[in-house]
Amino acid sequence: MLNVAGLHLWRGDRHVLRGVSFAANPGQCVLLTGKNGAGKTTLLRAIAGLLDPEEGQVAWRDLPARQSRDAFHGELAYLGHEPPLKGDLSGRENLRYAIGIRRAVTGQEIDAALERTGAQSFADRAVRTLSAGQRRRVALAGVLLAGAVLWLLDEPTTNLDAEGQGLVASLIEEQLGRGGIVVAAVHHALSLSAGHVVGLDLGAA
Image 1: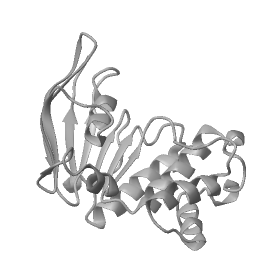
Image 2: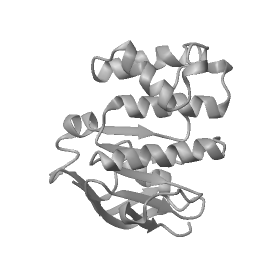
Image 3: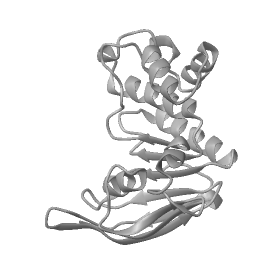
Image 4: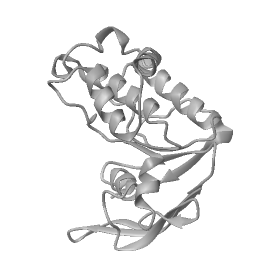
């Protein structure tokens, strides 16, 4: 369903992505590894359509993602380094508005997602008062609520303790079990079923 073919991308005079290619089918997780500066974040942003590569193509359901951008984004959930949360809103308010742009969402759905990510107890506090790990849990609840087939996760375990890292692995396994696809940039190994995982090492800068 996701096919990345021959992506080349420069940042200034630096050739960050050098002909990156891979495919991911339902139930598969592609783990992007490599040293800092290897291009993991750049690749995720290029797949999401936030950066335009100089060469190559991203295809979704056998169609170029650029040509079917709205449909592609409707099936995509992207979580970057910094959770996309408004500091003066509560976690619950952030989710209600962010997901509400995509689809109708009920309070019960929000409660269930917050409970699943362990964020229920602090969901009504202003995000600016939360720790980085707590903000990450709220953002993960947003990924769940998006109902997306494709997850693009940039260092999803950042600022999480061991229990939180296990949570991320469980959420990914559940997404794969639903027939979803996950592409995740990681520094630390995730405990995932080997049969579902494809590794892609981008090497050094």
